Structure formats: structure tokens, C-alpha cells
Image (cartoon, rainbow, N blue to C red; front, side):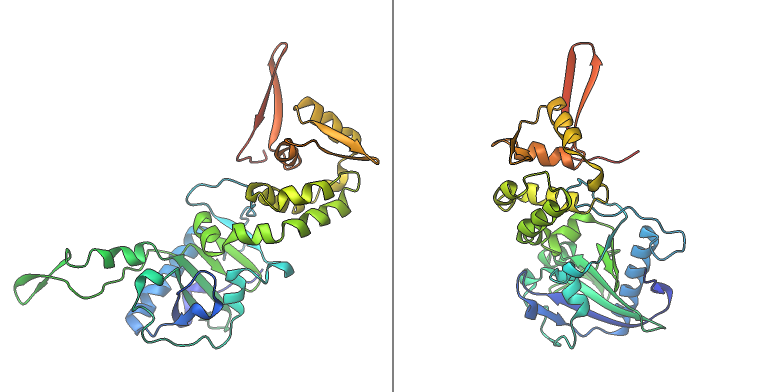
Length: 303
């Protein structure tokens, strides 16, 4: 785990992303020392809320299929196949171009970011979705200021930095404060869909008695299913599941399955239920005699 000394940041660069899909849209915008100090404060505020750079840090791991609140402290361990994600590519980018006029067209700004280095030259990338950043600009003409003993309208372009960032990126971890901001700027849905078939095939290697090949096409066309597969793949207890236990739980929770060549898989129309079950999101209760209730959980926390 890479600890960055956010209280002793020595170098700060500010930049913006001017397009959602093009890497060459990442540009550095020159800022003076006053803005750099504000950015340092934002980074410190983010780290303090996350408590990510302390020895006792024990943040829960981000799960693609989970429903999160607007603010939650989470960690996302960076793996080799994450290199295609926007945060990792931006973190590893070298010699980003400097654009003096990077803020000329605020409507094109997708997110803004800061690249920081501490006394040990450890690198930290901080990213924030550009929502409030552009909000004050839209209010131009309705803002006023006190100048020369007179109240006057502000006609200049004004941008408002936020109090903190959505998430922080180090060389081996992403620390998330706002899951929705992370998912939006990282374009997570498209990434998960792109890897859906690959993730499904890797599950087949772990659970050979499940017909994941039959699920691959379905997963590749449904974002929610793709997120579930990504979450299931991250589990470390799949090898403990047996075909008999799986069939029994499917029957108990109303998931219809079929068996072909010693493999079990969901019948058409039950694919999502089957994946929800594997990700521990489908369950039954029998609190009332002869009245079994089956539920699916959009969010689940292990207790």
C-alpha cells in the first residue's frame, strides 16, 4: 500500500479533461501559487475524510455491483487489467501538454484533476467531476462584488473549486470518497461491459460445473449483469461452491436452471436471478409458516 504524505506536498499541477473518450484531451492548465494552495487543502480534506493514509486504515473494497451512498470511504486495489481505465492511464501519463486556453470552453470540461508529489516524490492523482466547477460560470452577470465603494456585477469568467476531490489515485490503490464521481469519470459501465466476456470465461475456469459460456452473450449486453459478473469474479470463495449446493439454493430461491453435459446454468429469463444468487444478493426467508418469501438485494453488507 502506497502512503503519500499529503501534509507535505511539494509540487502541484492542475489539469482538465476536455473530452470523455479522447486521451489527448487531458491538458495541464497553468495556475499560480494561490490556486496550488487551495488544491493542497482539497487533497488534505479528501484524505482526512477517507482516512486512507493512516496505519490503521481498513477501508472496504469497492464492488461494481454494489449500490453506494453519495459519500462512502472505499478502496479499489489496482490490478494489472485495470491499465485501460481512465484514472490509471492518466496517473501513468507522461509529459501532458500545457494549454493556456484550457478553460476557454467550460462546457467541454468533463472533469478536473491535480497531480501532486510529496517530499519523497511519491505521486498522487486527485480527480473531481466538473459540476460545481462550471456552475458559478453559468451565474455570470448575477454575481456582484464590492469595488471602489460600489457594488458591481461580475462579468468575468469565474470557476469554483470544490471542497474536496471525488477520489485519489496512487500507484497501487484508488481511494474513493464519492462512488458516483468515480464511476462517472472512469466510465466504469463501458469498461465492465468491454471485459464482460473475459470475466465470464475466467469464472468458468473456477466453477467448471456452471455453464458460463451460455451466459457470456447475455452478460455482454446487460450492464447490470456485467457488473455482477465483475463482482462475482472478485470473490475468493467460489471454489467452495458445489453443484449440489448451488442447485439446492436455486430451487429454494426460485431460480430455474437446466443441466447440460454435467453443467448447470439458468434457463432463459433467469440469467439475472442466477447472477444475483452467485453474488449473494438473492435469498429466501420463512418467517411465516408455509409462506416462503424471496428477495433480491440491490445492496448487501456482510455481517
